[in-house]
Image (cartoon, rainbow, N blue to C red; front, side, top):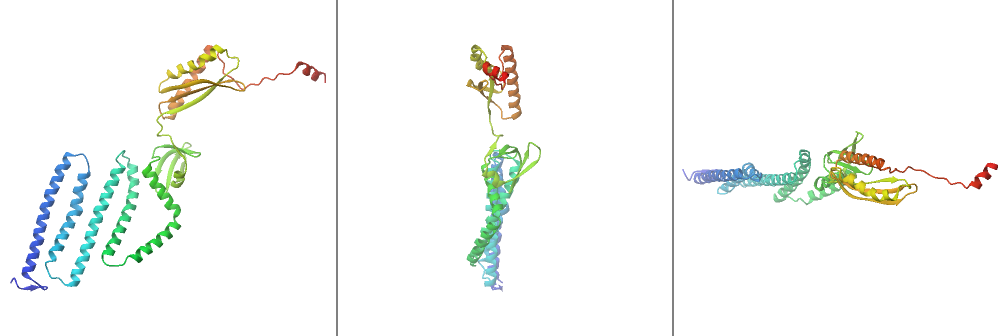
Length: 354
């Protein structure tokens, strides 16, 4: 019975092949059980998610690939028809390439998501990363398919040349879209602004609502939605006010020329006391700056320790009111734009005679 032949192979050879496959499957299942058990025990002691990723990858891709390789090498013990052997080799190569690309794509996706959420978690940002991941995976799978075709013995030179010519044609036809796409990648990785940031671009200002692959949408102070291409944003000077730590404020006030010298000397100290008594501020300087056409000009610099514009305006209003009250008490007058015209008396009498 052992020497009885089935499909050009003896029963002995078929039995040995089946035993090899059975033993390989048992060993691989034991390996999977021990490895996954140890990984689960390790995952319970750590807070990272990389161990969960490894467990998932082992179960979904590594073990199926090992089962397939075990069956493939076990079949080498048999004498198979050339056509069947060729088909089997191609099938195994396709399957192994699929599992390898799947593992690489999963690793890239996991690393990319970890990099995105490393510093701050943002659901909208994670949603945007899916578009970039899709592009990366398309490129990866295209390269993997070309690699597979090349290993199957086909000449891929013509395919690559055709893709190159087609790529140039597509790039010329859609250069604006590709420019916005690359600008989107710059915004995503460099993060000059994010959703919720208040920005000023040229004469446009508002809060960023959405960052897309081609356009960014900004809600202006007037309430309308401003849609800008990503290329316009990356080519412009953008002021991001949300990342302001503190606000430097410079303002002037003017006093009349007949203000007594003694009071002029104490005005900077008066201003300093007012600002230092105001919360969320840091005084910098106050000086008698210059002589104006109709007034004495004082310049004051201080810092508001908050980026919020409403807080800044409340503080500025409070300082202005305190200055007005103090100057009124000290009888110090603010200057108004005035002009004094001096007319010669003799010329005036001559004019009246005429």
